[in-house]
Picture (cartoon, rainbow, N blue to C red):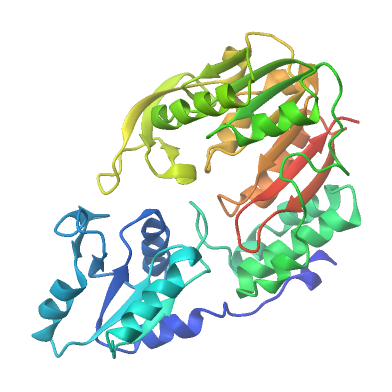
Length: 371
């Protein structure tokens, strides 16, 4: 049975939370960047409220980020000296900065505990074993709908890695080129590529390369105006012409929403304005409206948790044109089953595959291929 393959274990980072909660000392996040949002949410979901942030960047010091004051290391030590100098440091940066920060703190003879967390989820809530049991029917249907044994192994490994914190499970199923897996996606000479969440254009470049420039159209959706500038530069640098670029987000209806931008690949659309995060009003629209009835043969989608609504807004195009789809399924805990079942409800003849492309919880992709 499917459920017998799922681990009912406590996440490995539970011991860290126990240690933090057992101490009266405050929690300081080191790093006032993109990752701090995820770490803050992760801590709060485990009943821990950060007190402040610390950052080496002088331009951030003295500001407020995520509703928390940002200090320099010197100011931090002075602030807590009146409280016995006790605090926990949770490093809230990417792994590329982790070692340098630990080295800095060791060189400064930091005596307080220093932690590094990896088990947060991107945009969504944590998956627990209880959540799996509550939605067991949906998980089982999605699992049984996958077309090959390797997809089923990816599904189980990704789920167990999220539950346990055992990141070696990601390594066991890691694949090659995202969105263009040769064993799943075949390209013809007359493709029309819709890149939803085009970011800086990397996937459009790969699409043009794989089709040897023989395609009928490329359409890009990217709501971040700053990123669109880089996208256009990428297209120009690679000599890719006649790309339709829409500075819009994909949604299930036409609307104006809040876009929490400037966060590189983690920018996202929100229906409400979060005062703790800077946001810009943006226009969103359905894929149906953007296509205007035109043919599409391949849709890739990475829209930071808006995938469900974006797919809803593409229902008629999916039913009519039966395009290949590559959709990210790691932003929300329900994405692992929900997005497959949604596409399946449009056309049960699709063949479904799942692949994973990193050594962490990001870049799990669902492929839907017309029969």
